[in-house]
Length: 191
Image (cartoon, rainbow, N blue to C red; front, side, top):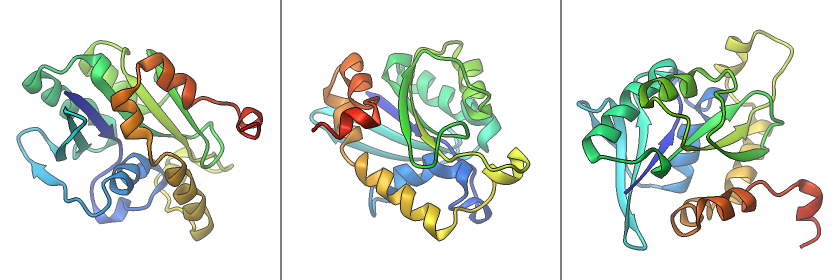
């Protein structure tokens, strides 16, 4: 079983905000699929099978800073190894729409990741970081601000470029997956 965690904040006021790019990516990947609320595990969830592997998608309803509380409930209940977890998160230090896949790395100052690391007791899980770029304003106001129409277009293009990511996550080994999704821009033009 694999656990795919999209990070964000629950509630209408946070929809299409920069900090909710993890929620947005899961909504994109699952198209019209409906998440259901699991109050016990504090998350919206959706379960499917891909190539014989059970995949559980969750959107923690704990708010960003306590995301680990929901993740650890799923890990404990389903006995999920940390190597079978991937977290989709926003990243302030990357240009809008850029992405990077990391394994066993520091939290980079991201409170949702800090919470997950604290609850799991390890950093040994994959993270797909999607850039939201940083403006010269207060960080809190920026990450909780809504994407503009032009920014949403870039995010949609990024998501389209990642449309096969979940399938690759299921079928490729970690080293190949990380290599595939960390290709430099200049290398992409050689294809």
